[in-house]
Length: 95
Length: 323
Image 1 (tube, each protein chain N blue to C red):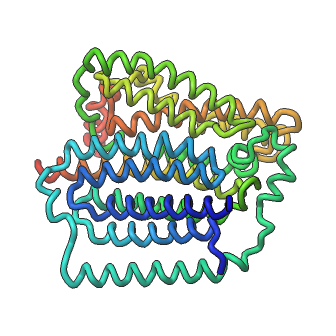
Image 2: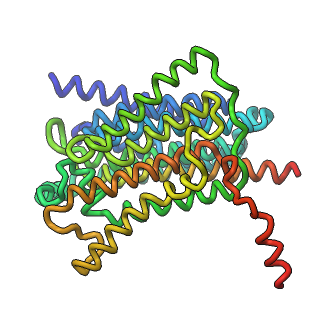
Image 3: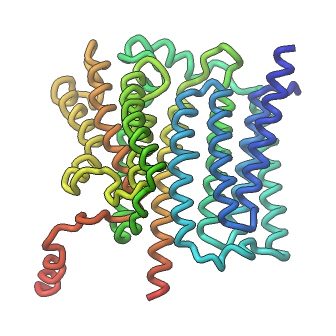
């Protein structure tokens, strides 16, 4: 097995996914969980981009890049929605 | 020798990503977690640049590090401080979750090692490269987003709209910030025009270079967030009626083009020859405005002032009476 950039980043992505999953299950606060799920998602993005990398000077596969680009935007709006839900939940609990 | 140096860089970057990710997930203090997460987003932007994905680097720098950071920091403001300590569940349950997560990660890593070399090296990249001259643009990522897989992007804009409508439905906006002091105010007066200019450039450049609707929209939203942090309660957004129009502009642009192409060529979003470039720019312009408004309203975190119609109380009452 040769150590390539592709492999290094793909394994990093897998590691981040596992880390985020553990955090999402073990954190108590909503903010911590949302943050952990974002790390989880970042791991998936990294895996996708790493396997589309084809070496220096070669044009990489654009399809995963397009997927990840939409993914980044969807992730931030989902995060905003989750945070708004959390805020509403706290306000409802206070009433 | 050169390859050895690249590998060193790769190992350092992945080590840092894992370290920052771990710090963000397992830090005891929520505030510290958020700061680590913002640093993680910036590092990710560098990694995208390293992996020949400049489109992603631009979007990540603006969204992953910028807008997410603003969102999480403002959420931190109304998070009770008591939650900061003892945020992690401990004990045998935690051990079990850790072991299971480790097992799953190891399984994924094993699958990856087994399949990475076997995977067919002839990927979609060749097909995209072959069809690129027909797409109307020369940036392959824009070609995939706005031409080959335009359907996906249309539905993604619908997802964004659904998310922002959900946020609007949950309550009024967060209270506005204090008016900025002379230093921040001066900085904002310089930065906002530059951000708008850069967004316009990215939108135009997206056809042939890294950039496009998502990056441009994110930068415009960043300008709006800057204005809000400087004390403008409306974040520089236009009147609520115009905001609504802007929110649906992306989907409307897409559907308009789709319906016209369906009427003439009997195929949805299949651009006629020679028109692709212009149509893509039209859709991207509308999508930029929609994405910018969506992200700005998401950062405000609720209905801005004046969003409700004046007679909002009357409708539910009438419904109740009719039952």
